[in-house]
Length: 337
Ligand SMILES: NC(=O)c1ccc[n+]([C@@H]2O[C@H](COP(=O)([O-])OP(=O)(O)OC[C@H]3O[C@@H](n4cnc5c(N)ncnc54)[C@H](O)[C@@H]3O)[C@@H](O)[C@H]2O)c1
Ligand SMILES: O=c1ccn([C@@H]2O[C@H](COP(=O)(O)OP(=O)(O)O[C@H]3O[C@H](CO)[C@@H](O)[C@H](O)[C@H]3O)[C@@H](O)[C@H]2O)c(=O)[nH]1
Image (cartoon, rainbow, N blue to C red):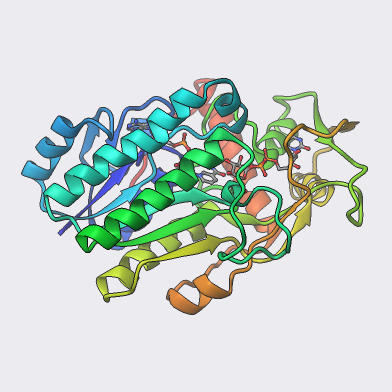
């Protein structure tokens, strides 16, 4: 019984592959390495380099491995890019998933876990946001994920598939042993930018908007540690294997931190000071995004371990220090599960 992980060489995918491999699961990965890194896969995990929407490739992988479930991470993830290139985003997020589901249905693979996003909610009417809140995405990225959610639901109803759609809130941090982490060059995530500043790779960090009607004027986010999120995937798999009904789950902790609090946490754990500049609001930003986590905590046997913001910041920083030294030729990379 093997789990097929698409996009398994990416940031969240590689942490999930590591968690599955450490739990003794058989895993195979399909990744086109457009933003992923083959070196971040544990030794012995087969990697098929190619498009997760290539039906011939998928048929070949399924012919060689006894695939029991699919976890689908592969996709394009940068919100502003999706505004410039909506067709590219609909192709890589929606059409890829459509082809993957087509092969899954043909080959009788009946368990599917899908990476969705809090971006499907758009500006929420209520915070914390429950799963039944209205979905009003503000970007083609969010729309492409919502369309895929709807397609998955329809496919599951028609062909008897069971699925879990996981809506991630703000994913951050790195493997606590710093074996892997976020390595994307030019990443735009707040915590990544802050640890780049703390490691001297940036002169300063801009805080986009300090005039919001929040306690300190900056936006508020619900950060989830990538290792806890990877464990949520394993728990979702166990839930489906136990016959759990198809469902959609928010993935966060239900606790919001402001942008300024987050930057302060990086300053504290690093003990390094860096310049913080107040900048205008970033277009399209949602003011407050915090998950209602009642459903995931009630349905899954999931025990997050790294809910503390300083722990998330410390792990992101340790990884960034290592990545910086690797990229400057002082270290070589090796992952062992
Ligand atoms: N990082 C976040 O904060 C966040 C939040 C919400 C949802 N998500 C979703 O989680 C998933 C993983 O995101 P990530 O942050 O790890 O990004 P990432 O870019 O690190 O990972 C994506 C992986 O998919 C691969 N890929 C892309 N298109 C492919 C294709 N057509 N075929 C095969 N491989 C392909 C890339 O090479 C990469 O390894 C995405 O679906 C993303 O939309 C991420
Ligand atoms: O240099 C920076 C970077 C970010 N921010 C602010 O920090 C907050 C968080 O921004 P960011 O880390 O870019 O995340 P989001 O825009 O909240 O989006 C993330 O979280 C979404 C789910 O909630 C995912 O869908 C997206 O892919 C993911 O990037 C926002 O208020 C930004 O304006 C800054 O002030 N300065």
